[in-house]
Length: 81
Image (tube, rainbow, N blue to C red; front, top):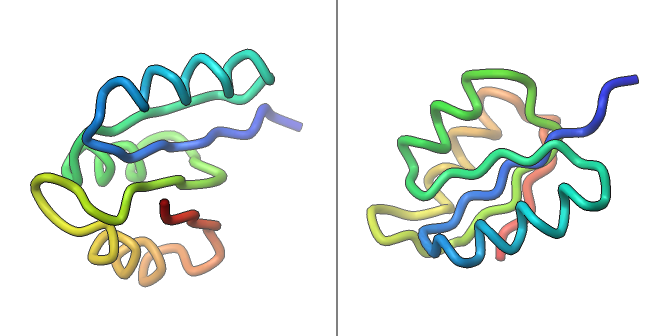
């Protein structure tokens, strides 16, 4: 079984660094995105097993991205923060 991959989407770079450090130590593969476009690119790439994202992003809404994710991959778990 491959190592689970978590995608963190947040426009605060400090939080992304914290998530990367904490989750990498626990053995997860971590991908980060500081914008909606970066999140879309990450989701189009290598398999993501879980998305954790901020509801309010500087350049858009996490809820809009949630709708896109659920339309494309309804079974992908998403946590809004």
